[in-house]
Length: 269
Image 1 (cartoon, one colour):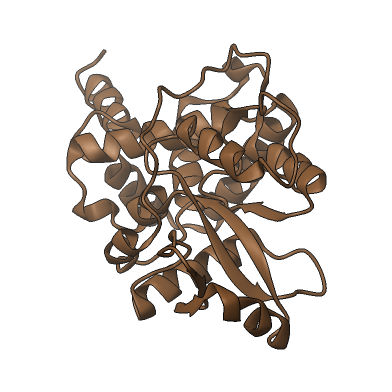
Image 2 (cartoon, rainbow, N blue to C red):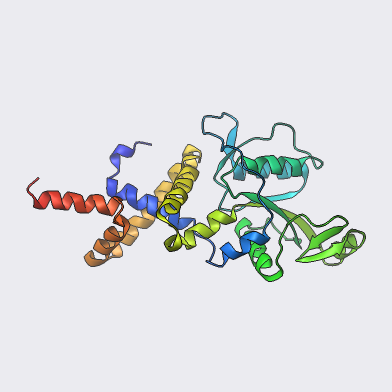
């Protein structure tokens, strides 16, 4: 895309809107993270130069089709570029591949297995993610590896020899969810983050946009530009000024640059 045709102010708006668009969870989400499955040790994130990279949303569809399992990736990770599995996905190896996959994602990524009523159509990944977080808050566990000889079903530990009957009686289906609770919580807790943490979160969100394929990236930016343009038209001059000043934040952001330019103009520069 030719970014030279966009004003610096619009690019700043897009960057802030992109981060805001990915805010999904409330402040209590952070307290539920400890009840989520522990994320495997993270390897160095993959780079965009890897020819085997694909958006995670594309990879999970392929893995689900090949394994016969229901595999979802919520919006905290779905646009992230990740490497394709090194071997053909099967019903026997897809969980091992999920382990490998989350290690290539930003720190905090993990996957969980939960049993839910069989849906009539494909489940919404973010709805499942919200359910898993709520279950973790209510029951202290969600999708984590259960002790030997047991299966976790809707927050309860059921003996393996009885689990099959419970699953059949309730018409449940195992759902595999890939998510990043840290990113889901970070957006809502923005004001409580340190400057370094805010910058790290912003970089993670920016990387997700950069990892999109060109078509998806263009559509996303066009959408954000349309939303911001409509919002700006509906704002009063005072509201626009407050918005720009808020974005400046005293850290040399877009608003700060605007004030610097105004000061320069006032000084005759």
